[in-house]
Image (cartoon, rainbow, N blue to C red):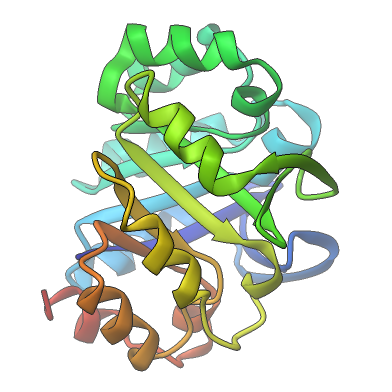
Length: 236
């Protein structure tokens, strides 16, 4: 199982939010590039980045920070946050980002998702943010009536291979992840499932490994020291 340490970026700083709330923000480091390098030094091969300014405002204010991370590490980099058109995808791919995550735009505009997958194949991942089993959009503020599991199947049927599934209620709460949801997702054939939200202990990682998930994203638990990154990246 691939381990993706996470860097969330606001105003060129590495931060963490609790349950996506911008009012509940903690700044962990003023230099996300240094954070990425430290992750790599500890054995990480993958990195999950969320551009929270992009998600909130659609801006590219953190573009140069992402460029530095790509240029100065050998990490496999995936990024999400405010990616709403093919031009933004192009910019990130040209930059050297390995995978681009589509969220709200993919839900609101299914044709956009189809076009992106046709154009870029496995360089596109679908980010599903779920609240009570239903897809949430617009920075988690709005819950739709779309069943999150059904949407994963629908996405698979148009060629999506990689799903990053986040249970909003678990994210940043340090209270464990939604194992039942991942058990259900793993019954869907043809998808690589990456767990996100609440992966906060070695026990969580053990359970996810047993389910044979493709990957797990770990954020706050690393920053708070609840999980030592070098212990989990080398335990595949």
